Figure 1 (cartoon, rainbow over the protein chains, first blue to last red):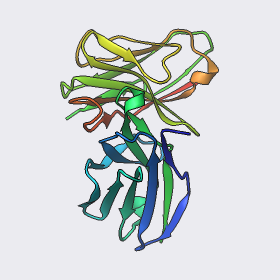
Figure 2: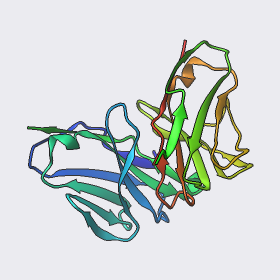
Figure 3: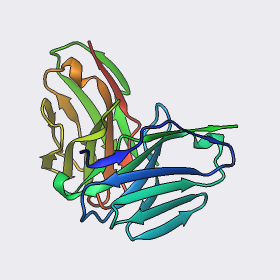
Figure 4: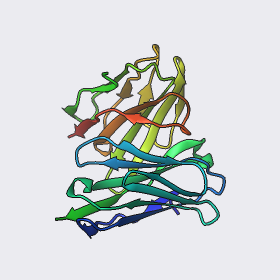
Length: 112
Length: 113
């Protein structure tokens, strides 16, 4: 079992719709969670960080964390073609020396 | 605001050659990291450094060497390149350890033939 798992996609959503991305992780004691966006051929850039259970909103993005179920999700509201990218979930994993461990990423395609 | 710069951005080398990827950051961040990104594996940590002269292995460190004589520089050396080391390499930095935001450089595309 991978320490951080994501569906590779592609997740195809129509413009204006909500894109919902999920991530599960193996370490029950993880406390720090991040979502990065990576455009093709570019480096990852941070979208959101979340540390507490519940929802955290930033513009069109909402991160949701459920530590009991060991999942973190990202919602993209009013999806735009410019949101087409790969979204990487990252979790600080104790077994990895408390280092950031990345999932394989979910590719999102927003169709006009 | 230069941030993190990597060089070279693109390199083709032959099996068995030594290759050094350079990384320079202007933020005076304590922590620096090297990741590689491959299809099917995502981003994997090669080495990290908590400060000058302090380095430690990550998940996939075999065949790689790092040094950190100055806070701002963190070069990654492939001692004897192999085809399996063909990858995209990202340098990153953060103010504190992984619980804080990590900022990535633009990446170095390395092909070993």
